Length: 98
Image (cartoon, rainbow, N blue to C red; front, side, top):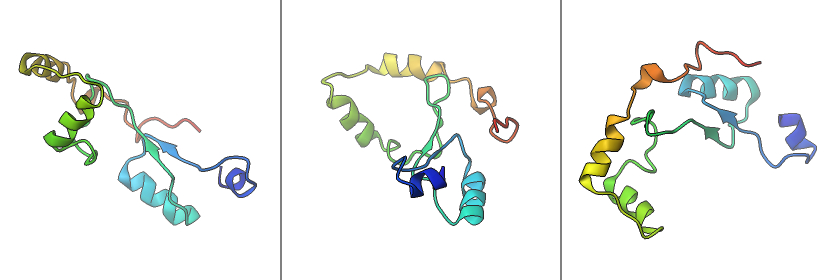
């Protein structure tokens, strides 16, 4: 991917579902940080850690106001009940796709 970026065939190279240790190993091996680490998010896997950009309640409220919508406390409770926990996620340590 880095060669493709150097050739101008892609704008940037990113990763998917990398843990901090994986990103650190990638940077150590290549000298380049990925442009993005795309991670899976769903009501069933809310990923409470690792997303400071949406963690503060004020920011969550602001994000919802963009669309002119809101969720009641009961709706938020119902969404939280969908959380299956981290054990339900596919572990990037156990799954290799290359």
